Length: 386
Image 1: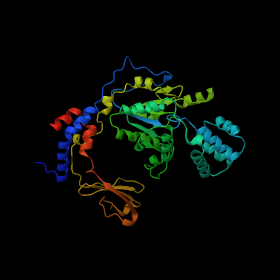
Image 2: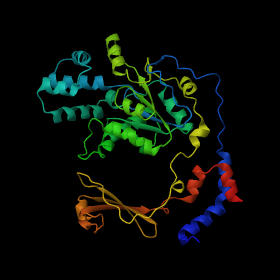
Image 3: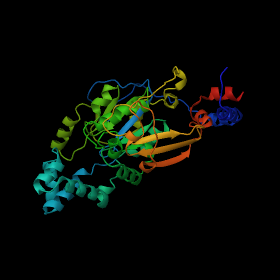
Image 4: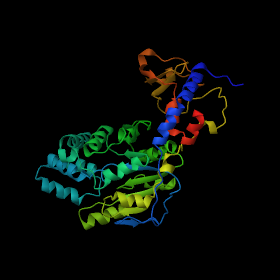
């Protein structure tokens, strides 16, 4: 016999009484299969670079860079304004300097020519993003709004990653007309939280991309980029890289082509045609709608007598407390967790003067009704209702 807590049993009873209405909702959201004609065709202006075959038998999860992929690249204009501010002269002269040095580290060059501290250079570039309209609000790249909307309607998870700050990303995406959930927008400040010194460093983006495999197990990663960062990581885990080629001159396009030589396909005109993209991807909405997250019920349960803290060079700032009745969650920010845990992993206490607490109802951690409505197949909902 299995003992069940009363609150869990009550939730189960509530699930049974509501199952018929959930079945009706599930019927309304039934997804019709899409029939594609002929073999997949590489879209116009796309070039096969790697001869790697796209894995179409698994659901997709898509990662998009921001500037140069979803939004028109504005970095040249940004650095031209910065050069003019620091060195004087006309904006045309500054733009010429940027073009001549476009494939070098322009932050380092600005620091060298101006003899200013790096912190001042970084602050100026950030101010230009925030205050210059043509830098602050770049338009969406042609075809990207429709492509993102159709991916979302086909139940393809869309995540945006960028070396820009989350605040700038949220503002620019909204201004350009994109409707992407905040939790799927990942900036440099978000990714830096996973580093021991909280700095965005080479390799941070690769580790963030790799972490997506835990969020979307069993998926094929589609990576849309205008640079080489993350390309090797995506390929390592069986994903597919789509590079967008930009350039205002033959020389710049040739340099960018070399920069993107490791992608799988290259979009020669740097634009998207949603219809052609979908004909190539062959998205199966039914496959996309399946629950591909690992289920606890598929694993063997075992009692763990003691959980030792993982070795780490810096404190773990976030702790999550669950009340004994499972009705309350609390996020705790501890500035020095050496005062919280003993070396053997046992908790001592949370010093009141060292934490900031945000508490809210847990909904018993996972709402059975919500899970069933969103995840359970229609025929199983009907079975529960009966």
